[in-house]
Image (cartoon, rainbow, N blue to C red; front, side, top):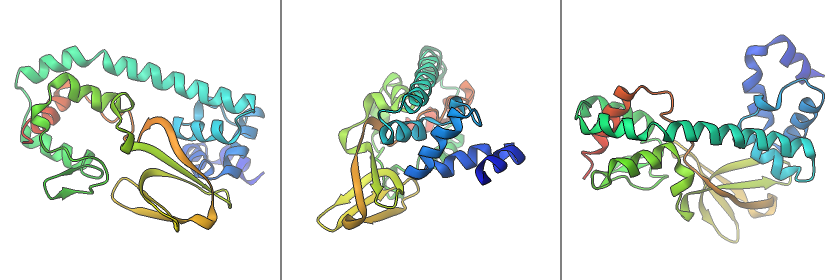
Amino acid sequence: PVIIKALTETPDQKASIITALGNSTQGCQLLIHLVDTEQIAATDISLPIAQRIAHIASKNPTAQSINQQAEAKKKTNINAAMERIPSLEQVAESNSGNAIVGQSLFAGMCLSCHVVGDQGAGVGPALDGSSERDTEHLLTAILNPDAAAESAYVLFRTIESSGLITEGLKARQDDRGTSVAHQGGMVTYIPKRTIRQQQHVGSTSFMPTGLIDSMPDETIAHLLAYIKTLK
Protein backbone atom coordinates (compact mmCIF):
# COMPACT_ATOMS: atom_id res chain seq x y z
CA PRO A 1 0.00 0.00 0.00
CA VAL A 2 2.81 2.44 0.81
CA ILE A 3 4.49 1.82 -2.55
CA ILE A 4 1.21 2.12 -4.45
CA LYS A 5 0.46 5.39 -2.63
CA ALA A 6 3.90 6.74 -3.52
CA LEU A 7 3.46 5.78 -7.17
CA THR A 8 0.05 7.47 -7.23
CA GLU A 9 0.96 10.65 -5.36
CA THR A 10 4.45 11.17 -6.80
CA PRO A 11 4.34 9.91 -10.40
CA ASP A 12 7.51 11.88 -11.18
CA GLN A 13 9.32 9.55 -8.76
CA LYS A 14 8.14 6.38 -10.48
CA ALA A 15 11.49 5.58 -12.11
CA SER A 16 13.35 6.06 -8.83
CA ILE A 17 10.90 3.84 -6.95
CA ILE A 18 11.17 1.09 -9.58
CA THR A 19 14.97 1.29 -9.49
CA ALA A 20 15.00 0.98 -5.70
CA LEU A 21 12.66 -2.01 -5.79
CA GLY A 22 14.79 -3.67 -8.46
CA ASN A 23 17.74 -3.93 -6.08
CA SER A 24 16.29 -6.86 -4.13
CA THR A 25 14.48 -10.11 -4.82
CA GLN A 26 11.57 -8.97 -2.66
CA GLY A 27 11.32 -5.74 -4.62
CA CYS A 28 11.42 -7.60 -7.93
CA GLN A 29 8.54 -9.80 -6.78
CA LEU A 30 6.60 -6.66 -5.85
CA LEU A 31 7.25 -5.21 -9.30
CA ILE A 32 5.70 -8.33 -10.85
CA HIS A 33 2.65 -7.80 -8.64
CA LEU A 34 2.44 -4.13 -9.60
CA VAL A 35 2.46 -5.05 -13.29
CA ASP A 36 -0.12 -7.80 -12.74
CA THR A 37 -2.43 -5.34 -10.97
CA GLU A 38 -1.77 -2.61 -13.57
CA GLN A 39 -0.29 -0.20 -11.04
CA ILE A 40 2.66 0.18 -13.41
CA ALA A 41 3.27 -0.90 -17.00
CA ALA A 42 5.81 -3.53 -17.99
CA THR A 43 7.42 -0.90 -20.20
CA ASP A 44 8.12 1.25 -17.12
CA ILE A 45 10.79 -1.28 -16.08
CA SER A 46 14.32 -0.88 -17.43
CA LEU A 47 16.16 -3.79 -19.01
CA PRO A 48 18.65 -4.41 -16.15
CA ILE A 49 15.77 -4.75 -13.68
CA ALA A 50 13.69 -6.76 -16.17
CA GLN A 51 16.58 -9.22 -16.49
CA ARG A 52 16.76 -9.59 -12.72
CA ILE A 53 13.02 -10.18 -12.54
CA ALA A 54 13.19 -12.86 -15.25
CA HIS A 55 16.05 -14.60 -13.44
CA ILE A 56 14.39 -14.53 -10.03
CA ALA A 57 10.94 -15.60 -11.29
CA SER A 58 11.95 -17.83 -14.19
CA LYS A 59 8.59 -19.65 -14.29
CA ASN A 60 6.38 -16.60 -13.89
CA PRO A 61 4.72 -15.56 -17.20
CA THR A 62 4.51 -11.90 -16.18
CA ALA A 63 8.20 -11.84 -15.29
CA GLN A 64 9.14 -13.32 -18.64
CA SER A 65 6.83 -10.91 -20.49
CA ILE A 66 8.43 -7.93 -18.71
CA ASN A 67 11.88 -9.10 -19.81
CA GLN A 68 10.80 -9.87 -23.37
CA GLN A 69 9.38 -6.38 -23.80
CA ALA A 70 12.52 -4.78 -22.39
CA GLU A 71 14.75 -6.91 -24.63
CA ALA A 72 12.64 -6.02 -27.68
CA LYS A 73 12.94 -2.31 -26.86
CA LYS A 74 16.71 -2.65 -26.49
CA LYS A 75 16.97 -4.45 -29.83
CA THR A 76 14.95 -1.74 -31.56
CA ASN A 77 17.12 0.99 -30.04
CA ILE A 78 20.36 -0.77 -30.99
CA ASN A 79 19.20 -1.34 -34.57
CA ALA A 80 18.32 2.34 -34.89
CA ALA A 81 21.69 3.35 -33.44
CA MET A 82 23.62 0.99 -35.73
CA GLU A 83 21.89 2.45 -38.78
CA ARG A 84 23.66 5.74 -37.98
CA ILE A 85 27.13 4.26 -38.42
CA PRO A 86 27.59 5.06 -42.16
CA SER A 87 26.64 8.71 -41.67
CA LEU A 88 28.75 8.97 -38.51
CA GLU A 89 31.74 7.53 -40.40
CA GLN A 90 31.32 10.24 -43.03
CA VAL A 91 31.19 12.93 -40.35
CA ALA A 92 34.33 11.51 -38.72
CA GLU A 93 36.17 11.37 -42.05
CA SER A 94 35.32 15.01 -42.73
CA ASN A 95 37.56 15.93 -39.76
CA SER A 96 34.91 18.32 -38.47
CA GLY A 97 35.32 17.10 -34.89
CA ASN A 98 37.16 19.14 -32.28
CA ALA A 99 39.45 16.90 -30.19
CA ILE A 100 39.60 19.42 -27.33
CA VAL A 101 35.80 19.40 -27.01
CA GLY A 102 35.89 15.64 -27.40
CA GLN A 103 38.35 15.30 -24.53
CA SER A 104 35.87 16.90 -22.14
CA LEU A 105 33.12 14.58 -23.36
CA PHE A 106 35.41 11.57 -23.02
CA ALA A 107 36.42 12.50 -19.47
CA GLY A 108 32.81 12.79 -18.38
CA MET A 109 31.53 9.69 -20.14
CA CYS A 110 34.36 7.20 -20.29
CA LEU A 111 36.90 7.72 -17.51
CA SER A 112 34.41 6.71 -14.80
CA CYS A 113 35.08 3.19 -16.03
CA HIS A 114 37.95 3.03 -18.53
CA VAL A 115 41.53 4.13 -18.15
CA VAL A 116 43.89 6.03 -20.45
CA GLY A 117 47.47 6.33 -19.27
CA ASP A 118 47.28 7.14 -15.57
CA GLN A 119 43.78 8.64 -15.74
CA GLY A 120 40.46 6.93 -15.12
CA ALA A 121 38.79 4.54 -12.70
CA GLY A 122 40.47 1.51 -14.24
CA VAL A 123 37.42 -0.73 -13.92
CA GLY A 124 36.99 -1.35 -17.63
CA PRO A 125 39.67 -2.05 -20.25
CA ALA A 126 42.33 0.52 -21.10
CA LEU A 127 41.58 2.60 -24.18
CA ASP A 128 45.18 3.47 -25.01
CA GLY A 129 45.83 2.70 -28.67
CA SER A 130 42.24 3.38 -29.74
CA SER A 131 43.56 5.50 -32.61
CA GLU A 132 44.55 2.23 -34.30
CA ARG A 133 40.94 1.03 -34.45
CA ASP A 134 38.85 1.93 -37.49
CA THR A 135 35.83 4.15 -37.00
CA GLU A 136 33.25 1.44 -37.71
CA HIS A 137 34.63 -0.85 -34.99
CA LEU A 138 34.85 2.03 -32.52
CA LEU A 139 31.24 2.99 -33.13
CA THR A 140 30.06 -0.62 -32.92
CA ALA A 141 31.82 -1.05 -29.56
CA ILE A 142 30.11 2.09 -28.22
CA LEU A 143 26.64 1.59 -29.73
CA ASN A 144 26.38 -2.16 -29.15
CA PRO A 145 28.83 -3.14 -26.39
CA ASP A 146 27.23 -6.57 -25.92
CA ALA A 147 28.34 -7.56 -29.43
CA ALA A 148 32.01 -7.20 -28.60
CA ALA A 149 32.09 -7.85 -24.84
CA GLU A 150 35.15 -9.79 -23.72
CA SER A 151 34.44 -12.50 -21.15
CA ALA A 152 36.31 -10.56 -18.46
CA TYR A 153 33.92 -7.61 -18.90
CA VAL A 154 30.57 -9.40 -18.85
CA LEU A 155 28.15 -8.17 -16.18
CA PHE A 156 28.28 -10.15 -12.91
CA ARG A 157 25.40 -10.54 -10.44
CA THR A 158 25.29 -11.66 -6.82
CA ILE A 159 22.14 -12.36 -4.82
CA GLU A 160 22.51 -12.47 -1.06
CA SER A 161 20.47 -14.45 1.45
CA SER A 162 18.82 -11.18 2.46
CA GLY A 163 17.58 -10.70 -1.11
CA LEU A 164 20.00 -7.86 -1.89
CA ILE A 165 21.15 -7.84 -5.52
CA THR A 166 24.53 -6.46 -6.56
CA GLU A 167 25.65 -6.13 -10.17
CA GLY A 168 28.89 -4.92 -11.71
CA LEU A 169 32.22 -6.27 -12.86
CA LYS A 170 33.68 -9.23 -10.97
CA ALA A 171 36.92 -7.77 -9.64
CA ARG A 172 37.99 -10.60 -7.35
CA GLN A 173 36.65 -13.90 -6.04
CA ASP A 174 38.18 -16.21 -3.44
CA ASP A 175 37.20 -18.54 -0.60
CA ARG A 176 36.15 -15.61 1.57
CA GLY A 177 33.91 -13.73 -0.84
CA THR A 178 33.45 -11.75 -4.04
CA SER A 179 34.36 -8.17 -4.89
CA VAL A 180 32.19 -6.43 -7.48
CA ALA A 181 33.40 -3.21 -9.11
CA HIS A 182 31.10 -0.43 -10.28
CA GLN A 183 31.38 2.55 -12.59
CA GLY A 184 33.36 5.23 -10.85
CA GLY A 185 35.72 2.72 -9.28
CA MET A 186 33.74 1.85 -6.16
CA VAL A 187 34.03 -1.81 -5.12
CA THR A 188 31.45 -3.79 -3.13
CA TYR A 189 32.69 -6.78 -1.13
CA ILE A 190 30.17 -9.57 -0.48
CA PRO A 191 31.21 -12.24 2.07
CA LYS A 192 30.79 -15.77 0.75
CA ARG A 193 28.61 -16.79 3.71
CA THR A 194 25.95 -14.25 2.66
CA ILE A 195 25.86 -15.18 -1.04
CA ARG A 196 22.94 -17.30 -2.22
CA GLN A 197 23.65 -17.07 -5.96
CA GLN A 198 26.32 -15.53 -8.16
CA GLN A 199 26.91 -15.70 -11.89
CA HIS A 200 27.66 -13.75 -15.04
CA VAL A 201 24.59 -12.30 -16.75
CA GLY A 202 24.64 -14.11 -20.08
CA SER A 203 26.66 -12.07 -22.59
CA THR A 204 25.54 -8.69 -21.26
CA SER A 205 28.42 -6.22 -21.23
CA PHE A 206 29.29 -4.29 -18.09
CA MET A 207 29.24 -1.24 -20.36
CA PRO A 208 25.67 0.07 -20.76
CA THR A 209 24.03 0.65 -24.12
CA GLY A 210 22.57 3.97 -25.23
CA LEU A 211 25.46 6.17 -24.09
CA ILE A 212 25.56 8.25 -27.26
CA ASP A 213 22.21 7.37 -28.86
CA SER A 214 20.72 10.80 -28.22
CA MET A 215 23.82 12.76 -29.20
CA PRO A 216 23.78 14.74 -32.46
CA ASP A 217 26.32 13.75 -35.12
CA GLU A 218 28.43 16.85 -34.44
CA THR A 219 28.90 15.92 -30.77
CA ILE A 220 29.85 12.34 -31.63
CA ALA A 221 32.35 13.71 -34.17
CA HIS A 222 34.06 15.64 -31.35
CA LEU A 223 34.24 12.48 -29.22
CA LEU A 224 35.67 10.42 -32.08
CA ALA A 225 38.20 13.13 -32.89
CA TYR A 226 39.63 12.83 -29.38
CA ILE A 227 39.52 9.01 -29.30
CA LYS A 228 41.52 9.03 -32.53
CA THR A 229 44.35 10.83 -30.68
CA LEU A 230 44.79 8.00 -28.16
CA LYS A 231 48.08 6.27 -28.99
